Amino acid sequence: MALMKLVKILLPLRDNRGRKFPRALYAEVNDQLIERFGGLTAYARSPAHGLWQSAGATKRDDMIILEVMAKTFHRGWWGKYRRALEKKFRQDEIVVRAQDISRV
Image 1: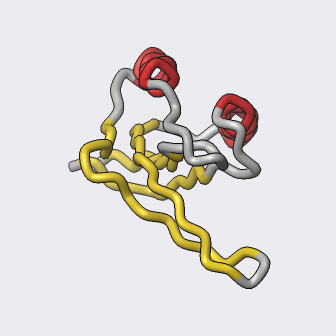
Image 2: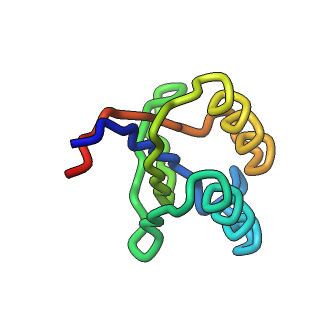
């Protein structure tokens, strides 16, 4: 078994005004990840729903989830990439999380 990292990126479907992001934006992110990691899995057909508390109100985001598998996790690169995604999608925070997995 090879120990690897599974990295998940949660991308919003709409901006803070409720406007959908263009498909080309997601295609660009997909292309970048495929080029760097050799592939990805996108959960895009049934959007995931994110809920959180802010200023006493419950907020909701619909999002797609992208996953890549990597042999190693370079925290510096991922931090820089996350900040670039936040700028591109005009978000205060984009969630990027990594976990250890065993590939059998």
